[in-house]
Image 1: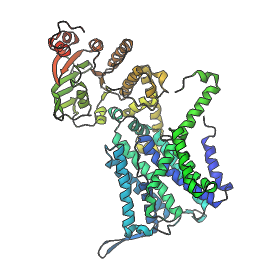
Image 2: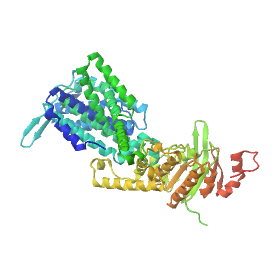
Image 3: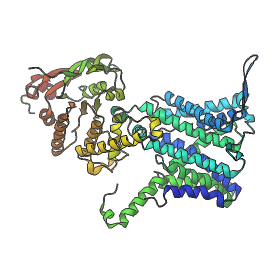
Image 4: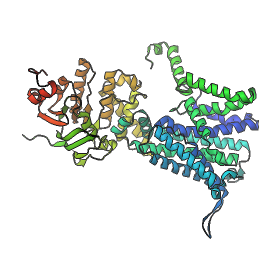
Length: 341
Length: 262
């Protein structure tokens, strides 16, 4: 079926910094990778459980803020005369804290959304994102509000024998993002191809029937929300230590919309869909910037999006799969007679 | 003459939708290993009774007991945990995914893998997955759907979707299976096939409670028939008795009827 085996793709992606020397291109690829992780996490909820989280950027932002704050340190005046001082911790610890805190909020949203489905789930998640944004904007003691968290340290690895390696350059950041991408992909793949993943799909396909055969739908929705939020938090952590500045604009609604576009055009409920969507809509604006005038760039962008949704409503990955299946069926004389859905 | 013990007991159940009394003081039992049918004209409250038993509706009054446990207040998934599994009046399958996957979801209860075990890909998770797939294939053969396993649930013809529903319910390992109008809309030969399947299910030691309008099916497979009209039970007994019961004939055909066929 697949023309390239998985390891060949990984080898290709790993080789990119060896022949792409242009730093700006690498920057675009790193951003694309971060968005791919975020889109994969959204797909777990939207594509598998069928619940549209329109506040998904909140988990991304929580991961970014938590990771930045833990690695920068902060102090909070909790009561008159008492100030809580948090010393800066290593970046890897901040990153893990970001994943954990985002996951915790995912759990909270999952619990809150007990029996809340469809439009109501959308409202819960949108409101959640707005509340988190207001907190980031107004709790100046902690988040610096609109002044932003600056000078966030980049990822540092201490390798035995080699000393400290700090990720100032694009190349190590590229590999870091690639590693998180592959890890997220592996986690989601394992999950959706298991008993738990079938429970997610059961919720999407027919909740009443799922309940009636003993699937505790709420429990599995919470599980999906936790893992989805944690992965989005990881994407946020990558972003914070790569861009090195985090402000409340990270919670802009448009980022959630971009993630949704990536998932839907790539193919929701497929493993590769969000990655394909992220690559297309991560790189497309950069290509358009070079070939079109600023005022037409976004018009073309929107037009391409509409074309994809119009002609491939299932998304690119499912369309490619059925096209390949059709071609395989017509290529072999036996397959041509076989049934085709 | 000791009749088998009652496994399901519906005791004084009352359900109201606003001011409308859908069920008033409904009581009946189902015995171990039997095929019991709940019949009655449209709107008599049969599906409402199913919804109460399986946790989709909470009764205003009364209790539902299954073996030792009280089912009131449990969620449908918890009722299924206790071995009570239903099908739906309106055909209900996982339409967008292959038939094989439909049955795999039904097998949820037979899997034990925890989320963290899945994430670590422990060997026992893989073994369990293999076992579940074999069981799914076995169930598909049982329902005569093995040749359809790759097709999406929604792509099956109507009669086969109804068989798939039963296969999914059977996958959940019921000890009591509730079938809500399983043969409605089937042609006579499909119905005959379904009746054979009910016998096979019963052969596996599963108790069955059936709601059905097709009287040939009801009279053909049931050990006992409970007749419901306007939320109350008006008759109860073996099929042959029920067919002659004047109250039942009146409920189905009205006052003026002189003759009533099966």
